[in-house]
Image (cartoon, rainbow, N blue to C red; front, side):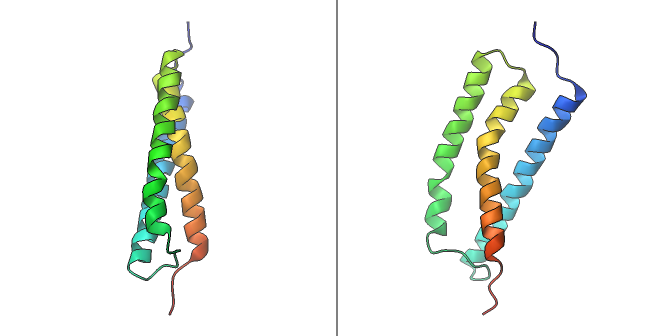
Length: 104
């Protein structure tokens, strides 16, 4: 019988979801500022933001389905689903933050 989720397990899942939400908001803000000409972004940023979503979501769904089929707990399923999404939001947030605001 699998062990039950501990409060630490649930806290970790909540933390991962919070990081995902914060990184998503920062990426959206920097991209919107880029569209307004206030943030340094590459010309391919608009295409990139559309192209990256399908593979990340597909990987997220595959991870969740695999974890479910292996009998994982709900918090484990959620963590495996969040992992590829966080990888993308984390890399985007870091990359865009390095480019910085546009001052000209």
